[in-house]
Image (cartoon, rainbow, N blue to C red; front, side):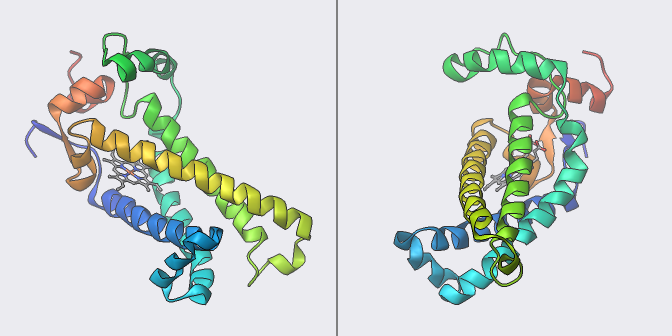
Length: 209
Ligand code: HEM
Protein backbone atom coordinates (compact mmCIF):
# COMPACT_ATOMS: atom_id res chain seq x y z
CA UNK A 1 0.00 0.00 0.00
CA UNK A 2 1.37 3.46 -0.86
CA UNK A 3 2.14 5.95 1.92
CA UNK A 4 -0.84 8.03 0.68
CA UNK A 5 -2.98 5.49 2.54
CA UNK A 6 -2.55 4.03 6.01
CA UNK A 7 -4.07 0.74 7.11
CA UNK A 8 -6.61 1.21 9.93
CA UNK A 9 -8.39 -2.17 10.06
CA UNK A 10 -7.53 -5.70 8.94
CA UNK A 11 -9.91 -7.65 6.67
CA UNK A 12 -11.00 -9.76 9.64
CA UNK A 13 -11.79 -6.67 11.72
CA UNK A 14 -13.94 -5.27 8.92
CA UNK A 15 -15.81 -8.55 8.42
CA UNK A 16 -16.30 -8.64 12.20
CA UNK A 17 -17.69 -5.07 12.20
CA UNK A 18 -20.17 -5.66 9.38
CA UNK A 19 -21.38 -8.92 10.93
CA UNK A 20 -22.01 -6.97 14.16
CA UNK A 21 -23.98 -4.41 12.13
CA UNK A 22 -26.05 -7.14 10.41
CA UNK A 23 -26.87 -9.04 13.60
CA UNK A 24 -27.44 -5.82 15.57
CA UNK A 25 -30.00 -4.77 12.94
CA UNK A 26 -31.78 -8.13 13.07
CA UNK A 27 -31.72 -8.24 16.90
CA UNK A 28 -32.99 -4.64 16.99
CA UNK A 29 -35.91 -5.19 14.59
CA UNK A 30 -36.94 -8.47 16.23
CA UNK A 31 -36.78 -6.72 19.63
CA UNK A 32 -38.92 -3.81 18.40
CA UNK A 33 -41.46 -6.31 17.05
CA UNK A 34 -41.87 -7.68 20.59
CA UNK A 35 -41.74 -4.27 22.28
CA UNK A 36 -45.07 -2.71 21.25
CA UNK A 37 -48.23 -3.91 19.46
CA UNK A 38 -47.89 -1.12 16.87
CA UNK A 39 -44.60 -2.72 15.77
CA UNK A 40 -45.96 -6.28 15.75
CA UNK A 41 -46.00 -6.28 11.93
CA UNK A 42 -42.18 -6.57 12.05
CA UNK A 43 -42.61 -10.19 13.18
CA UNK A 44 -43.32 -10.97 9.50
CA UNK A 45 -39.63 -10.37 8.77
CA UNK A 46 -38.72 -13.29 11.02
CA UNK A 47 -41.30 -15.89 10.00
CA UNK A 48 -44.09 -14.90 12.41
CA UNK A 49 -44.42 -14.13 16.13
CA UNK A 50 -43.22 -17.51 17.46
CA UNK A 51 -40.07 -17.45 15.39
CA UNK A 52 -39.40 -13.81 16.33
CA UNK A 53 -39.61 -14.73 20.01
CA UNK A 54 -37.37 -17.76 19.55
CA UNK A 55 -34.77 -15.99 17.38
CA UNK A 56 -34.42 -12.66 19.21
CA UNK A 57 -32.34 -13.92 22.18
CA UNK A 58 -30.00 -15.91 19.91
CA UNK A 59 -29.49 -12.90 17.63
CA UNK A 60 -28.69 -10.84 20.73
CA UNK A 61 -26.15 -13.38 21.95
CA UNK A 62 -24.64 -13.39 18.44
CA UNK A 63 -24.17 -9.59 18.60
CA UNK A 64 -22.55 -9.83 22.03
CA UNK A 65 -20.12 -12.60 20.99
CA UNK A 66 -19.09 -10.80 17.80
CA UNK A 67 -18.78 -7.47 19.60
CA UNK A 68 -16.59 -9.20 22.19
CA UNK A 69 -14.03 -9.89 19.45
CA UNK A 70 -14.01 -6.18 18.54
CA UNK A 71 -13.82 -5.28 22.21
CA UNK A 72 -10.74 -7.42 22.78
CA UNK A 73 -9.00 -6.00 19.69
CA UNK A 74 -9.85 -2.32 20.27
CA UNK A 75 -10.15 -1.80 24.02
CA UNK A 76 -6.53 -0.66 24.45
CA UNK A 77 -6.88 2.09 21.84
CA UNK A 78 -10.10 3.25 23.54
CA UNK A 79 -8.63 3.81 27.02
CA UNK A 80 -9.13 7.38 28.29
CA UNK A 81 -6.10 9.69 28.08
CA UNK A 82 -5.36 13.25 29.20
CA UNK A 83 -5.94 14.74 25.71
CA UNK A 84 -9.42 13.19 25.63
CA UNK A 85 -10.63 15.47 28.43
CA UNK A 86 -9.24 18.47 26.48
CA UNK A 87 -11.01 17.19 23.36
CA UNK A 88 -14.38 17.02 25.15
CA UNK A 89 -13.95 20.58 26.44
CA UNK A 90 -13.21 21.88 22.93
CA UNK A 91 -15.86 19.76 21.13
CA UNK A 92 -18.85 22.19 21.48
CA UNK A 93 -16.97 24.86 19.47
CA UNK A 94 -16.27 22.30 16.74
CA UNK A 95 -19.83 20.97 16.58
CA UNK A 96 -21.63 24.32 16.90
CA UNK A 97 -19.31 26.64 14.94
CA UNK A 98 -17.00 24.31 13.01
CA UNK A 99 -14.01 25.82 14.86
CA UNK A 100 -11.23 23.23 15.09
CA UNK A 101 -8.55 25.54 16.51
CA UNK A 102 -8.96 24.33 20.11
CA UNK A 103 -8.93 20.60 19.32
CA UNK A 104 -5.91 18.78 20.79
CA UNK A 105 -3.94 16.15 18.85
CA UNK A 106 -5.36 12.68 19.54
CA UNK A 107 -4.37 9.06 18.94
CA UNK A 108 -6.23 6.36 16.97
CA UNK A 109 -9.60 7.40 18.44
CA UNK A 110 -10.91 10.74 19.68
CA UNK A 111 -12.92 11.12 22.89
CA UNK A 112 -16.26 11.02 21.04
CA UNK A 113 -15.38 7.68 19.45
CA UNK A 114 -14.20 6.36 22.81
CA UNK A 115 -17.48 7.34 24.49
CA UNK A 116 -19.37 5.54 21.71
CA UNK A 117 -17.20 2.44 22.21
CA UNK A 118 -17.75 2.34 26.00
CA UNK A 119 -21.45 3.15 25.70
CA UNK A 120 -21.86 0.21 23.28
CA UNK A 121 -19.83 -2.08 25.56
CA UNK A 122 -21.88 -1.18 28.66
CA UNK A 123 -25.26 -1.31 26.88
CA UNK A 124 -24.55 -4.74 25.36
CA UNK A 125 -23.47 -6.07 28.77
CA UNK A 126 -26.70 -4.79 30.35
CA UNK A 127 -28.77 -6.19 27.46
CA UNK A 128 -27.20 -9.63 27.89
CA UNK A 129 -27.44 -9.78 31.69
CA UNK A 130 -31.03 -8.51 31.84
CA UNK A 131 -32.21 -10.49 28.79
CA UNK A 132 -31.12 -13.79 30.34
CA UNK A 133 -33.22 -13.05 33.45
CA UNK A 134 -36.51 -13.07 31.51
CA UNK A 135 -35.61 -15.61 28.80
CA UNK A 136 -38.67 -17.83 29.25
CA UNK A 137 -37.32 -20.83 27.33
CA UNK A 138 -34.30 -21.32 29.62
CA UNK A 139 -33.94 -19.32 32.80
CA UNK A 140 -37.00 -17.25 33.69
CA UNK A 141 -38.74 -20.03 35.70
CA UNK A 142 -36.11 -19.78 38.42
CA UNK A 143 -36.06 -15.94 38.55
CA UNK A 144 -38.48 -14.07 40.91
CA UNK A 145 -41.13 -12.19 38.93
CA UNK A 146 -40.20 -8.84 40.58
CA UNK A 147 -36.63 -9.18 39.36
CA UNK A 148 -37.84 -10.12 35.87
CA UNK A 149 -39.95 -6.94 35.75
CA UNK A 150 -36.97 -4.75 36.68
CA UNK A 151 -34.89 -6.62 34.08
CA UNK A 152 -37.47 -5.92 31.33
CA UNK A 153 -37.34 -2.16 32.01
CA UNK A 154 -33.53 -2.06 32.13
CA UNK A 155 -33.38 -4.16 28.93
CA UNK A 156 -35.57 -1.65 27.06
CA UNK A 157 -33.59 1.29 28.50
CA UNK A 158 -30.25 -0.22 27.44
CA UNK A 159 -31.66 -0.94 23.95
CA UNK A 160 -32.77 2.70 23.67
CA UNK A 161 -29.36 4.10 24.71
CA UNK A 162 -27.61 1.58 22.43
CA UNK A 163 -29.76 2.68 19.46
CA UNK A 164 -29.07 6.37 20.14
CA UNK A 165 -25.36 5.58 20.37
CA UNK A 166 -25.50 3.72 17.04
CA UNK A 167 -27.23 6.71 15.40
CA UNK A 168 -24.49 9.07 16.70
CA UNK A 169 -21.83 6.60 15.51
CA UNK A 170 -23.30 6.28 12.00
CA UNK A 171 -23.85 10.05 11.71
CA UNK A 172 -20.23 10.77 12.73
CA UNK A 173 -18.87 8.10 10.35
CA UNK A 174 -20.69 9.80 7.45
CA UNK A 175 -20.19 13.42 8.64
CA UNK A 176 -16.40 13.21 8.94
CA UNK A 177 -15.37 12.96 5.29
CA UNK A 178 -13.01 10.11 4.47
CA UNK A 179 -13.96 8.00 7.53
CA UNK A 180 -16.23 5.44 5.87
CA UNK A 181 -13.41 3.99 3.79
CA UNK A 182 -11.74 2.86 7.03
CA UNK A 183 -14.51 0.25 7.33
CA UNK A 184 -15.16 -0.35 3.62
CA UNK A 185 -11.55 -0.58 2.40
CA UNK A 186 -9.55 -0.88 5.61
CA UNK A 187 -7.39 2.17 4.96
CA UNK A 188 -7.59 5.95 5.37
CA UNK A 189 -5.73 8.69 3.55
CA UNK A 190 -2.58 9.97 5.19
CA UNK A 191 -4.15 13.46 5.10
CA UNK A 192 -7.24 12.25 6.99
CA UNK A 193 -5.08 10.57 9.62
CA UNK A 194 -2.86 13.63 10.07
CA UNK A 195 -5.84 15.97 10.29
CA UNK A 196 -8.03 13.95 12.69
CA UNK A 197 -5.62 11.64 14.56
CA UNK A 198 -2.22 13.34 14.54
CA UNK A 199 -0.64 11.20 17.32
CA UNK A 200 -1.71 7.99 15.54
CA UNK A 201 -0.44 9.36 12.21
CA UNK A 202 2.97 10.04 13.81
CA UNK A 203 3.09 6.47 15.15
CA UNK A 204 2.25 5.07 11.72
CA UNK A 205 4.41 7.32 9.56
CA UNK A 206 7.22 7.61 12.12
CA UNK A 207 7.65 11.37 11.71
CA UNK A 208 7.30 13.88 14.59
CA UNK A 209 5.67 16.62 12.48
C1 HEM B 1 -24.47 1.36 8.88
C2 HEM B 1 -24.01 1.41 10.10
C3 HEM B 1 -22.56 1.67 10.45
C4 HEM B 1 -21.56 2.33 9.78
C5 HEM B 1 -21.68 3.05 8.44
C6 HEM B 1 -20.35 2.25 10.57
C7 HEM B 1 -19.13 2.78 10.22
C8 HEM B 1 -17.97 2.67 10.96
C9 HEM B 1 -16.69 3.22 10.58
C10 HEM B 1 -16.43 4.02 9.32
C11 HEM B 1 -15.81 2.91 11.55
C12 HEM B 1 -14.32 3.30 11.59
C13 HEM B 1 -14.14 4.62 12.34
C14 HEM B 1 -12.68 4.95 12.53
O1 HEM B 1 -11.84 4.06 12.50
O2 HEM B 1 -12.38 6.14 12.79
C15 HEM B 1 -16.50 2.16 12.57
C16 HEM B 1 -15.95 1.69 13.73
C17 HEM B 1 -16.64 1.00 14.71
N1 HEM B 1 -17.97 0.64 14.67
FE1 HEM B 1 -19.30 1.07 13.20
N2 HEM B 1 -20.63 1.56 11.72
C18 HEM B 1 -21.96 1.18 11.69
C19 HEM B 1 -22.66 0.49 12.65
C20 HEM B 1 -22.11 0.02 13.83
C21 HEM B 1 -22.86 -0.68 14.86
C22 HEM B 1 -24.36 -0.99 14.79
C23 HEM B 1 -21.96 -0.98 15.84
C24 HEM B 1 -22.19 -1.71 17.14
C25 HEM B 1 -23.23 -2.45 17.43
C26 HEM B 1 -20.66 -0.46 15.46
C27 HEM B 1 -19.51 -0.55 16.19
C28 HEM B 1 -18.29 -0.01 15.85
C29 HEM B 1 -17.10 -0.05 16.69
C30 HEM B 1 -17.01 -0.66 18.09
C31 HEM B 1 -16.08 0.59 15.97
C32 HEM B 1 -14.64 0.82 16.42
C33 HEM B 1 -14.55 2.23 16.99
C34 HEM B 1 -13.86 2.26 18.31
O3 HEM B 1 -13.23 1.28 18.70
O4 HEM B 1 -13.93 3.32 19.00
N3 HEM B 1 -20.79 0.14 14.22
N4 HEM B 1 -17.83 2.02 12.17
